[in-house]
Image (cartoon, rainbow over all chains, first blue to last red):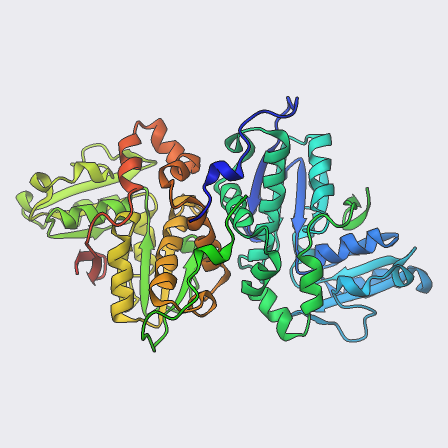
Length: 264
Length: 264
């Protein structure tokens, strides 16, 4: 009736990886340990902050700068030339009044974002990035740039990697855990290492199972997700569809200074 | 390569259920809402507190009384006739010195437990039961008595049900979430209601996927779980094997007074 683990795992050692990547998944920023930072932190907010960030940088945006506070965002952005900045703000799924953009990746077309810096604040995703901004490397990941993230991990081989879902106001979210599972699954598949060597905590095994169960129907999964339903009520069906595509953008948003992400 | 949702779901309405059960899964007691209680709370600590509780009551134990505090356990149990009591205590997976039992369901044979009350304190499971002890109905669930729990839900039709994993010292645990998923999956299957009508939060969809992915190899899942590994290091392989069996005991431990569970 259903597949078992073996079908979703790869038994043989495929690569010559010697230094082993250990992945830890946390469902929300609140669940991350507070007394340490990892070598590499991967923030995930599939619907839609990190999908938007990847899209902006792929479309030629100069950088993405994240803020939890809207006032601070406005203040910092004003020191930037008007023609070089874009203000993006989302609260509760909807665009902040007076801002150039909300949080829809579909609005981030090359003609709007090329050469510009996106100053952005969202309900959950920016908080995740801020929580881990002291890690040695900070990356923004979504389904659309999953392949680029995995490629980086396999090339750079950081020893300790946290993948952190943003959730919704402190709660678990399906789409972020599924994306974390997609990253972990690809690492297992491409290194050929046993899952138990890659997985640093139980959440990794869970997330891989979630991804494996839904990988052929990510859009269907988003329809079951509470935040997916919220966005559908806000008429964001095209956003869901766009964000459910895996590996479509070869772009890696990496933090260059606290809160500022640029294309790697 | 892997199954998708449809194979694990049942599309047609099978029962005449009119009052609809809404399930919410919480990964740990710490993640449950603090401002309310559900109509029915189901505490899950597969490895091993709730498996032990079901086993004791199936073997003819008079009741199970749970304590977070060991001193309090000793004090209360002393008011009970010596031949009618059993002290069970576990910390860090190991038996508390001086107690009759640790937390192994295999020790709970009819000749030891019949007619006796089990006074028990464990690292995680008893805390979960105490967190929800004010709910209208409180049940202890594990894989071994999953069927009895589901039968109760379908017969009594409580409107709001929380299934709460115990985890390990505040962290997510694979085996408890998989068991929560096994309960939710059976409710979906046996009512024939759409998953979205049954699922009150994202955790439910996640837990069903985890269970579906591993249902034919629960013992294998336990081997991937951090607490399963801890118990294997403590030579508890037979406990893992016993707790990985689904629907073997037709017993429902239900709270009769705060902290005291008896056979329904």
